[in-house]
Amino acid sequence: DNDLYVRDYDRCVLCYKCVEACGIDAQNTFAIAVAGRGFDARISTEFAVPLDESACVYCGNCIAVCPTGALMAKDEFDMRAAGSWNEPAQTVTDTICPYCGVGCTLTLHVQDGDIVKATSPLENAITLGNLCVKGRFGWRFVQNRSGVLAPATDLLRTT
Image (cartoon, rainbow, N blue to C red; front, side, top):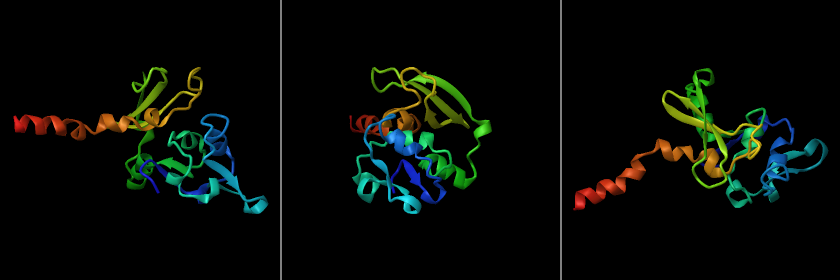
């Protein structure tokens, strides 16, 4: 229901790792919570609203900790569905996120010359594996040069 995540709660085993990542363990937005009790327990947004109407800041920390793929980055989901996701063929490179001055370590996963995923090492003293939306999904900017160069190209044509 958004451009960044795919949610398939049928795959959820109620480990609550996403709830913890969205709560006091990392983000403190509490956009994801446990709804219901007992056998009716399930993972949901607060008040069961769509994700874009929740407190979600799209940091992706919930998808980073999900062990079953119930929460997955849409790019990875689409590549898996197309049969093109090839984790063993991916190379990884550590770098520093360029978006702010915090200095978060990013691990960029590259497949066929394209960045396909950004993570952060769990043992990193600054991030503890957590990232913001820019760190986790900002790599899309690097891949899409057409949107960046189009205004410059238009300017050259008009002068």
